[in-house]
Length: 346
Image 1 (tube, rainbow, N blue to C red):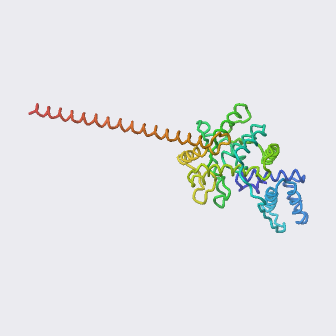
Image 2 (cartoon, one colour):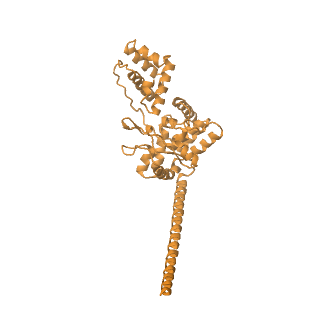
Image 3 (cartoon, rainbow, N blue to C red):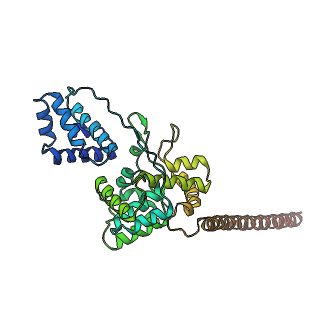
């Protein structure tokens, strides 16, 4: 396992290890036993076992990824005898975004505060499911401790790049809004969440979250074609479209980075991006009553803040003008004293 996971990013290690646990539970073979067994049987039997185990998993996409990772484990440990397989995954159906009222209904069937928090974090950050589950307290601690809202999610470079360069599905430079922050405070107050730097905020497995959200969706009677997790991300992207923020800032928030912006952000850039996120938040907020009205209020608050900043700047300039005037008066007075002294000397 160490050899297999050694050069993998933290998120990948979690995913690969989870697949191996699923394999061990289904077959009774731990990683060492699986590798030893594979070297003593026909490679076709090894491939059949992987395929049969994959069929027990809930979706085609998970089955596809499982097969890839099991083959990867064997290859990393020097086993290259598996026959070539034409592994491919074709999206069977286009998934639309959740509507605001659908997310509210979904939340009403989630009883556990951490499960509710997962949905709010997915909606407000726009992150993919595994990225949401990989967020640790240290990633949000800086802004949370300062009482800043929205809270920047300062992920490490491994979420944006790998050994080959920028990730095709890297995370965005995103935030958590007021709803997530409120739930975080409640979870800490109740003891459900311990704010330790290396603790996962949502300490649940992907399969657990999938089952819980799927059950809530069925109870709520929502459209079964909705993707349990990706449709939340699409809601976020649609909300940014409706907010009409700068397209380059929108891409950064979403994680559509290209090759030139896949790097960690400085404090100044986070503050710059925070302004655009705040402007979009009325459209993102699933509990907003009237997004258009709230957006106008946000714009008014930003204009008010800008006016206050300008007033302060003008007042400082005024003080400087007074100071210069006083200095000039002193200079004139000194010049007059020098003239008087000169006359007395004569």
